[in-house]
Amino acid sequence: MAKEKLYVFRRYKKKQGAKNVRHPKLIVDSIKDKYGHLGLTSSSKTGHHKNYEMQHNPQKGKTTKSYLRKSLEYDDKELFGEILNDYKLSKEDKEYVIDFVNKHKKKK
Image 1 (cartoon, one colour):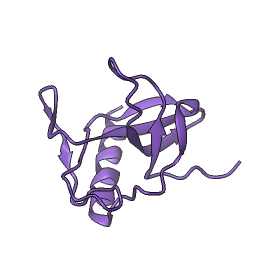
Image 2 (image 1 turned 90 degrees about the vertical axis):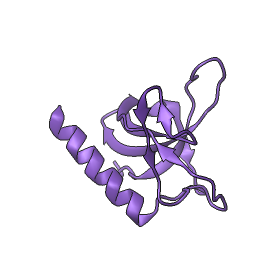
Image 3 (image 1 turned 60 degrees about the vertical axis):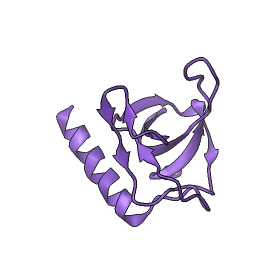
Image 4 (image 1 turned 180 degrees about the vertical axis):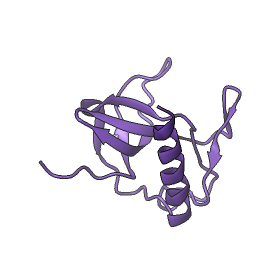
């Protein structure tokens, strides 16, 4: 079995909220038939939780502010599409995400 690519964005196929928004998710972990992921958003807050402000917008050609949700969630791999090639994580953001994921895994 090929090693799963981590720290890439994939389209999320699960319906979220009233609309089927299909937001890109950052894949940060892979366990058997599930991916660990962080949500990408343009909002600085989710509910009353602050999101992480990314240093660079991961979508090619976009300069607007972009944020990652600070909640690591797991869902079935079949709910994710192909890797989105027009999204790329910057070096600074990747360092933050790796640190965040490692701290989160230690808590479990």
